[in-house]
Length: 186
Image (cartoon, one colour):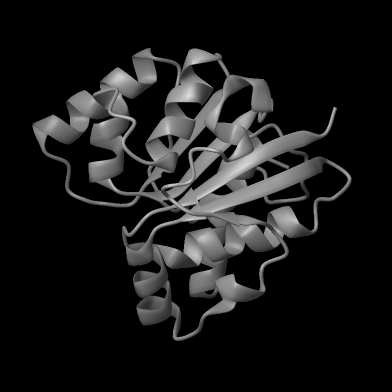
């Protein structure tokens, strides 16, 4: 079965993660049937600031407005099996944990959780306060996966892109996609 994936990009720092994730998903056509993107205005600003480009405009995926509750993944009948929020701001996490579906990102996350599908939240903020930790607990108990954008260094990354890949490759694994990447002990 090919995956149908929603990728939400929020305004948290970490656009390098979103760019790498979307580039990798674009070449996984044998495993991915469809990718849909919801990107906040703040995410576009942060992307442009951090990466000095607007590469999101060239991505081969449909974009949906945060206010588009007619998007196919705004309902469980849309059959999207995975949602990845990358990067996921603490505000977005808090709204998901509180069950507040006030935009397409939080509505889609609510749908994924209620349908017992896969929600992966790639948190980038640090340090965490107790509210963040409790929100992570709530989303985890509801079936979501908290994947902080904490890179690993076993593979001896040589660039920022290599460092980001250590997180993105973990996210791709969590989404259930096969890939050729560094594996500990192999």
